[in-house]
Length: 418
Image (cartoon, rainbow, N blue to C red):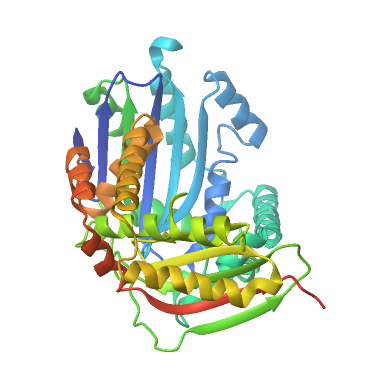
């Protein structure tokens, strides 16, 4: 059931006895800007660290523990051109704990959102400094994960100069010195006052009661109008190439293609199947031919972001095999473009996608994410229709999608220092 709490603030309640735990997700969405990405990431850390009622991380953790081990946390992510900050809670149903537990969780969420540790227009300075240092350390540590590092380098190479998608959703080190305990208050107030808000509640709850509880949140009306949700850029003819050398045991060869097929648009379901055939499943050509048969990769896979059009292929290889692997990858892409896959593989991939989706419905957090996705994209995912759409994908549909791939960037992280 859907409730409009005020302009730009919507509540979606899924009442079901299927799960022993309840889920609450409060999603703040705004158009991303160079100024707000890192600031909102740090803000998320501060919101889950302390409040006026619970002024230390220990005090807040103790309160969560008293709520039968409830989990309450925050994170940031990106959806196309939108930057989102999420406050999430997961906790046992009242009947397995105490009556009123859900209300206590909602009260805690209210405290976190409306009463962060701000005094005299400034976040608590020691808490701010600690969380800024923690975020700095976390970002620096990501460079030690070479698979992640290679993925970030490929994104930087793929997205055009000036694109905000070059900046990770969690922010960048160069922005941190510019942030202060005072400036982050402006970021916080802008989020609470202006962001589009979607609240999703799932569990064995009374819908009207949940609506009454959230109607007490002091959200003011907002227009929350955005530009285009999906990010698009003009493809280039000659792919960009970049190579770096570091001391590591396993080289990384990543390729970026543009695939201009977006969420729930025409050919979307065919793109899921194409990805499964090329590199998105253990049955795929990349996995079977590059990793298993040729034994040229420790891993070889592909994925498609249906919000920004980036289709990427990732491999971990030995440095001496680089040219051979790149040729073999292109052979697999060409094979799918030319329809060189049998009906058995097509059917197995489609069955796998359907099975994965239906299995995911047994996980309450997946349902919450899907509902949020549908609300933001103003679409509706019906299980029966999704299954029908996947089953209806033909070999010619897959070929049609594959032939829209355009190689845009190749990033190579060499592990051979000799």
